[in-house]
Length: 384
Image (cartoon, rainbow, N blue to C red; front, side, top):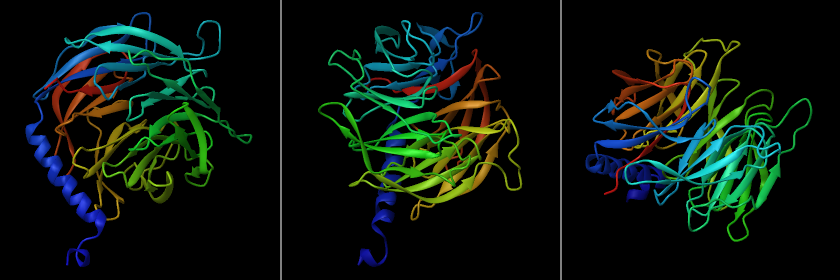
C-alpha cells in the first residue's frame, strides 16, 4: 500500500528527519571549534581553538602555528586533524603542503608530520570514509593529489597526482575535493573549466581512475565556477555552489556508477540582484535535519538559505542574512543544527547565528569573537 503513497526517496527523507530530530535532542550542548586562518606578520599564526557552549563562543587560543591553514578536516576516528597550507613553495619546489596533527584530550594539537600537496596553492582537502586517504585540490596548479594516512596518523607521499586539462583561454583551478558517501568515488570541483571531475578510487594502491564519464559539465562552460560541493545525507543528490555566476546547482547521483547529473540551478542572490564585479560565492553546507541548504555570498555579503524539496531535492531560496556578514569565506553548522558560525575574512571576526529550525532563517545572537583572517570553521563533538 505504501508504494502507492510514498516514493522510496520520500520514505528515506522522512526517516532521516525523524532520526535527525531524535539525535538533536541527545547531542551535547558544547563543542570544540577549530578555526583555520590566513597567516600574517601581525595577525593570525595558524589554527585556533574555541568552544561553543549554549550558543556562546569562547575567545580563541592558538593551538598550532602553521602557515595559511585555510581549510581543515578531522579524521573519522576523531583523533587526528589535517590542514592544507595554502602556499606555493615547499622545500624549494612549487608545491603546497598538507599537515597532520594529533588531537589531544584538552583539544590541543600536536604536530604529526607534513607532506607536499605536489601542486602549489592547495585550496581544499577531504578524508575518505575509511580514513585511509587525504584528497587535495590544488587551486594554483589545477591539480589534485591523493596522500595515504598511516596507522599512526602520519601522512605519506602522494600515491596519485592528476593535472587537470584545460583548453585555452581557460585555466584549471581545482577548488574542492569530495569523496562519495561510500568512499568508492572521488570528485574535484574545477572552477576554471566549469566541471566536476569524477574518479574511481583505487583503495588498495591509492589511485585515481577517471570515471565514465570523466566529468560533469556545470553550466554552459562559460564562467560558472563550481567551487564547493556536498552530498545530502541520503547520498542521492549533491549541491555545488558556483563562484562566478553566483548560483547553486542541484545534481542527482547514481551511487552504483559514481556519476552526477545536473537537475536545477538557482541564484544565491535575491531576485533582481545583478552579479557585479567583486561578487563571488564561497561555502555551501546542508543542515543536519536535511531540510535546508546554506550558501555564502562575498561582495554582496550574505548567507542565503534554501529549503529542500524532500521529494525532488530541488531548492527554493527562502531568506538572506546580511547583518553581521562581511566576506564570509567559510561557515560551519554545529552538529545539533542550532547554530551557524560565519568566518568573516575581511571583518576579522567569527559571528554566531541561531538557526530557525522551521524555516532555516538566521538570527544574530550578538555573540562574536575577533580573529585575524578566519577562513575555516570546523566542529568537534566532545568524547562521549
